[in-house]
Image 1 (cartoon, rainbow, N blue to C red):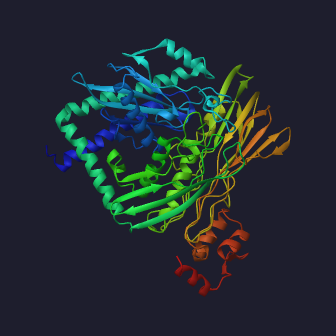
Image 2 (cartoon, rainbow, N blue to C red; image 1 turned 60 degrees about the horizontal axis):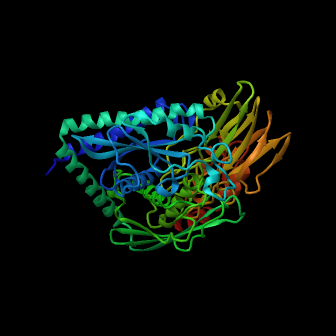
Image 3 (cartoon, helix red, strand yellow; image 1 turned 90 degrees about the horizontal axis):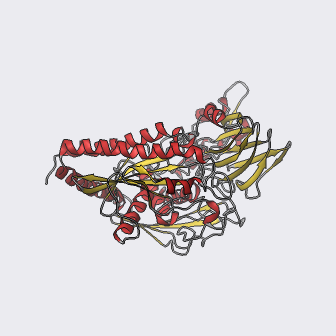
Length: 583
């Protein structure tokens, strides 16, 4: 069947609109700030045959592109093998098992079969970050976990809703293993309702164009995405492009973990070889295969954003060499840091490898940490328990055209930090500071964006704090002569005394009392190009806005701002010109 281009385009955006409405419904109905305000969720449409991605919402987390595709594929395989019961209309499966296509245990996925005329047509699926799924510490970010059981409740694919009715027995098991269980029903119903919205909208779209046209359009969109991606890959010169990115530590052993990447480009294919990366680690910074694959996909999406989100876009991409490394976690390896932290190091490795081959498309390294801070305890003022989850933005890397974005969302998604007013209303905390982190952007011809600095005090409560962050040892990489961004820092004030976690930005189970405070400063992005080639007037503006000090302007950019506001270049014009020719 031949479909005219206009109809094909309308169907393409119609499918995305279905997913966008699921995203919006999920966020608006959810109770937890991490979903309702931070939008740590995603919705998509997946093939009934193999779980491959058909469409995903524009506002969904990119890291879930690959993991939800992988988990839906595992679900279909288990159903065919008779391991998991076959679906009926209005069933909804729940799963968070990292080894069955997931991320960490807090990312809980629902999958609903979509039927047309009595036949399974596709799957509607979404993922939401639950604030807690049990485990040894509130919030699930156990920095010292050595087995996945310490991180929380692990669920294989089971039918939480059977023909539209919540299975009270399965739900009771879930609630008996998580904290603040009475609050989860709001998120569960919101997640299920979003899938129902998707069913209604997809039915309306198919009623408009007919089933045969929709089937042909979905196949054509996949083919065109693959063709477009191959055409863009062909612009990269054939060769091997290598890089190394570092994870600070695994939270247990205080030694860095290496992500070694060699990208082999041949014709219209890219092969990502991770051989030589560090072996499986003891602590929770292992990455399951689905997350590793998804991290590569999202990095390529950053580089080629014009390619539609479809399984076809990933067909020219092959990932090898992960066996026997910490990028292919097997049970019972702990994995709480895989989606939020390791995934971003993988993307950083892809950027660092390809920046010289695609200098106009690839940026210097972004902040590369979600800043996972979990706080759980008892609110004495309200007489109830709580679990708070805080994520943070950071600086983006500079690029060939302009400076990096300040306080942007993490590499893996569009999640934004919840407003501090919502956090103070929902939890017993008070924010004393929430501001741009001055001086954190890596120096460059186009500097990195600046990170965030916040200070939060515990009020009227006893609680335990846990951190799983990264880039505390090494700042985000500058490229093409640019400087690294500032590292992540965490300072805990207890009884008026300051301490820094032994692993810099990873620690768990820190007891806090009312009046104790936590100060977090997130990384700035890496700089792009030689700082001596930066426009002196741009340096002057940064100094005037107090983004850099006078001393930093002189040391990093070779520029002195005089007391009367004039610009004096300390490096000679010839030196600056020579630096520019090396870009």
